[in-house]
Image 1 (cartoon, rainbow, N blue to C red):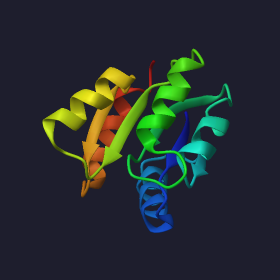
Image 2: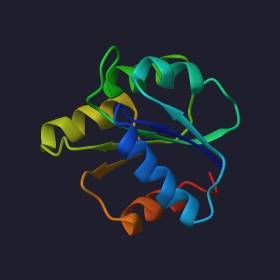
Image 3: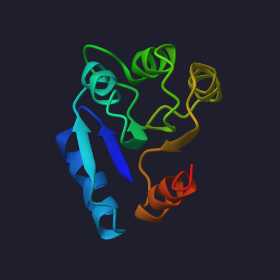
Image 4: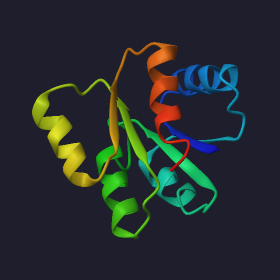
Length: 119
């Protein structure tokens, strides 16, 4: 499964990529902001998007809204420090499929990814 990792922090992208690679996921794309994420989400082979919320140019929430508005149904997991209930609800309404709060463990990340493997 091809995974798109979206985060403005290259360190977080590298951490997520390393966790994914150790679990056997090697087909990984990267985006540094929501604008890049929207463009890369057009790759029909992307099976899962891991999206940060707080990014420059286009936020993760705006990117999710744009991806969903285009008719793209690729599963999206919001990976963010935003943990208030209102924010989670806002992200769900925008069209995310799951939520993972930073900091997270490698196990929690891989559990989320595996959840969408067969979809």
